[in-house]
Image 1 (tube, one colour):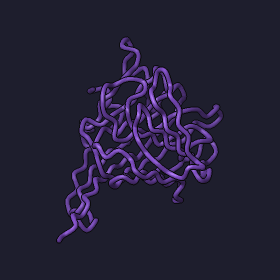
Image 2 (cartoon, helix red, strand yellow):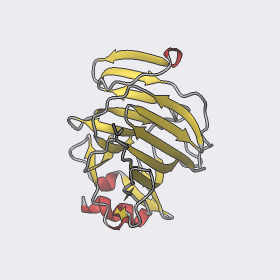
Image 3 (cartoon, rainbow, N blue to C red):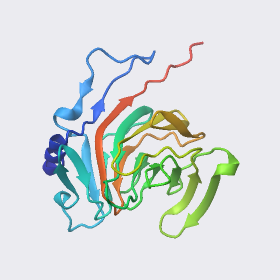
Length: 229
């Protein structure tokens, strides 16, 4: 994983873990993992592939080629958190597919049991429950299916499309707090899932065959208040 660390450091991608007080305020001295990025590991569907086959640097931006399929994933599990990142599709190229997986558990594969915040062009802001991951939402925007390879899939469509054209940066905010997960794109809420599985799990950045650019990945754990009697 030395190569992943070097590439991400060069690209200026940071994964920041910031502790929160029970009232939601940040601690005075946050723990910044951007110095080493030891929080990241990498899964590649092709066992013969290398990390260098997927990532390279241009003008300070981390560029993912998308091939072979796979994902970066955090070493530690996260339950309640706020995740913020920026993504864009490259200019003058056809935009494609990608996603952010949260609360990922079980074996590494394409694709693992998790809740996906979709990045596919035209569908950014959709939820997908992969491998039987449970979620709920308005019936008119939900559908489920059984996939021979990926297991039970649950899709909750976004309420609006807020993606910018290729070449422009988008901001994604993913807030997982208890059984509710909220998606915010470019400052506006586009989806909210309820009754989500509560198990903590990995956070993953997927590469799904399409070039995608990423920067400024920040995760802030949330400490929920315990009701006092």
